[in-house]
Image (tube, rainbow, N blue to C red):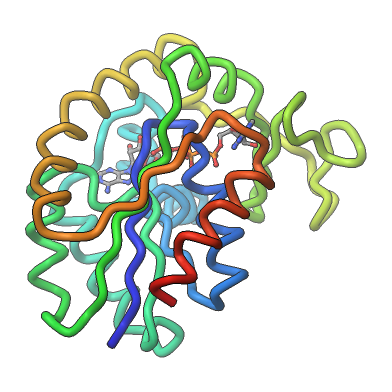
Length: 215
Ligand code: AP5
């Protein structure tokens, strides 16, 4: 039986931060559609350029492309015992599509991180990222050396979609799709919902405790 944890929450709720910590703890690979798309974008391919045009404006890429990316990724050997999905599914259609790729024997668990709109704006406004995938916050989670990644030493930068006007659009897009997604998902799968407005370490501990019952 594979363990599949689906992380939900608005942009900036800490899905990436927490799913990385939980993946390390439970030895499960984290599959982040945002990371996979940004990786393709950086590769400079024709597809990467098309992706950049959408994600830099906070718009979603096509379900067809996301399906292809996920279907290929979950077949890899490191996902044989389970995996964490961060940023997918994003709406009820993507959830239906995902369920078709899974088996009835898989354990599917929803993990919701709740934060207010105000906190989303604080967080994304101070987020700094590295090409290696590491994420920081200038106040809440600063790097040891200002502007440099702790892991690889590269220069940190602001994601193009973390501009204030684009944050508003992403948040609005999330709200529109999250409600039908969550109401459908909750009817069929167990849900763990945590308050995301606490210290990063506190939320991780809370999640580990709750998820251990399933691991
Ligand atoms: P994606 O990268 O998934 O963006 P998102 O869902 O908007 O989420 P974020 O990455 O912005 O936030 P997060 O919740 O991971 O927070 P984080 O841990 O970084 O997707 C990007 C784009 O790709 C989409 O807009 C879309 O275009 C496309 N895409 C992706 N998936 C798709 C799909 N399925 N279908 C179609 N298109 C898709 O934390 C945020 C900040 O807060 C950081 O600075 C962090 O250090 C800080 N922080 C975290 N936790 C705390 C805490 N507890 N206290 C204080 N600070 C904290």
